[in-house]
Length: 256
Image (tube, rainbow, N blue to C red):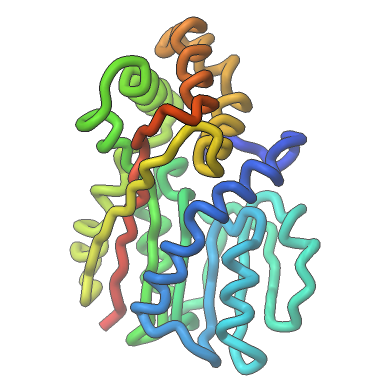
């Protein structure tokens, strides 16, 4: 596993993850509801982060259900008090999951950090009950490359190229569905949600905090100049600027 870009030890990480949850949780829940999420389900979440989705899963599966949340750093998860929540501090690349045990296995914005993402998907597949569902949400930077221009586009291309040098794939979203089909899963579907947002908004603040955290590494790599970085950050703060950047691609499937 590559060194994680956004460690929980960063003082602003709780705030950053809060903006991410507000931006993405509604899409995630919509796709879970399409899969039939209901009371009594046993769920596994990998890379559970701040636990926003873990708490939603606990609420929806109820007292007859169970949620297992896994992360390398469970500092935020340990603050959640839910009787049907189990928290595990594990590296998902090395962890062994119970075989044929889960109705739903879910992860968001995790696999693109893992060169071993295909192996992790195979373990997730094996851990599903017959008829159980996978829900995978991963980024794809395509909208910024294809639809934007100027500093906004140049920044995202530089960010993508730098990410690739450290083993992070910001084009993974488009690849997951085909791999799920190759594993023999049924009912494979893939949908992309892209947010068009203005400067100063919640999504803009999420990306502003994200980039502030990695600024020195990104600029130091030479893929983004200091001047381009500063111009990009000003766009994120400009309420008159609207832009698209990363799509989050949801791939779902069911075990036969």
